[in-house]
Length: 485
Image (tube, rainbow, N blue to C red; front, side):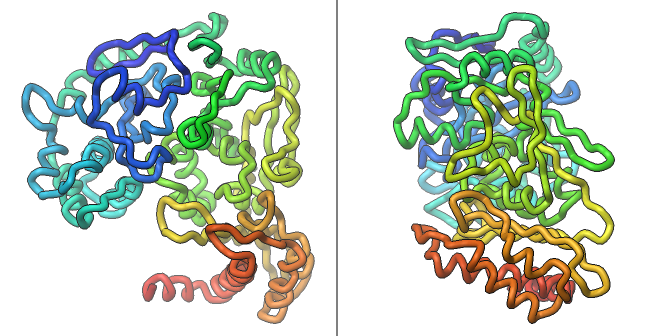
């Protein structure tokens, strides 16, 4: 059974399809049709809802795509849809701002924009409006009728308002209710959803997860589910057995040590971003272009590694940094270099019943130079054609350390070993870079697909190495390029 709050009432569900999306639940079960389906793939934002959860005894509000969220993800949380905002016959201040600024035309996308602005206003009310935060929060919402200027105006108006709404008034009671749902002894029996032949197990400890996955090694692990859900919504597949990781607190934990950042496999990218950005600014900038805010609030670093996609954004960066994985199978743990994890297209070194428990990212050291670049058709909310990461140590004009990795260039995210061999020990100069660029043709034989041709991919990979060279040779060059772009 799962339990969550919706419109002030505790909802309990036990015999329900665990692959039912929140979008379908709202529209088909709850009769709340304000939340719209635009793309069913997390690209348009028309289905945006807000979820509240307890963090440090306060409610944290985050957006997510209802079309990609299976119902088990709501356990222990508060669900807020666009119908939840109007109170005692009056529009919510965020809705009123959309009206005041004439920010809607056909209205199909408007509920999603309203929910993104609601979450933004909750997050920024004490700090006032900031254009960068506004644009980031709206990057996952598309409007095909009008320009975005009036919507941005509505966001700025909503963030300037000093208001108390029904959610503020009921926060203590909501926190108490959600804490009561989550108050579950470690030794208690695990939760389960079942509907016919479909089951979803909800372990609440690492030990339960390890035992269940060892017993059911063919089960699909559900963390953020932003990729797994597409198998249901786009490919119409059935998932007979899932294990949901959302209740395993240890998998969401992030710890900063002297030499490594330890990131739980189920930690959301939104939670990883600040720490990784502080350590490696380019990592942070790239993660800000990872899909949309709604996706980052749900997608996990472990999932981005675990699905072994050749175009995943984080693996090339983690490969270049020399990251490691802590894998667990039953009671046994082992540490594996990420270099050894990817075997072939969608094939990894994980054994039956083994899962990623933590990702170990080395901390930055003095003299280290790290650069990461993503090339895609759109700046925001798009998949990489080529992703590149460069980790270098240059001293007295010589390359004393180098790790280079690319995504989108092979069947897996992959190190550029021939390129590295040319650079290691060589002078950091233009001729060396050109030889290293030629070596990339030995490392990769990319494919042509709808995103890019093989010739384009190879040329882009070479040009990104050249870009890295120019930036490190002349740091102000990067600023000039950005200023004049």
